[in-house]
Length: 107
Image 1 (cartoon, one colour):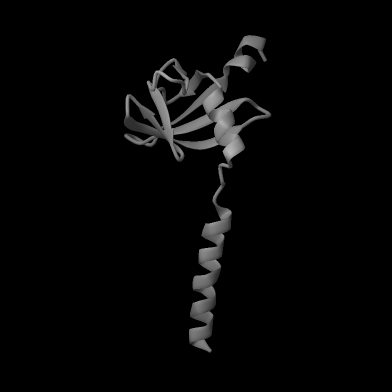
Image 2 (image 1 turned 45 degrees about the horizontal axis):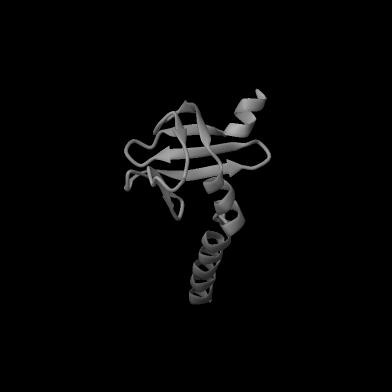
């Protein structure tokens, strides 16, 4: 009985980790890459982040690279709120960036 309980806990933990993590689908990655992100507050890599052909910024999974050096991970993003939240790999500080369209609209 004790072994069954231990196996149940292991399987349950695995499922929580597997399905509990926020998945970034291809359409969301496309949205993140196609937008110019303007600095809002907190941790700052630069005044803006734009994933384009210059390769100044690039994205590998959820990691943002600046000049091919990993700088931050994407913690959260919201299409409806035009927000991108990142976390520094150096010190763990959180930073917020806003979609340029929202910034230009002044909302």
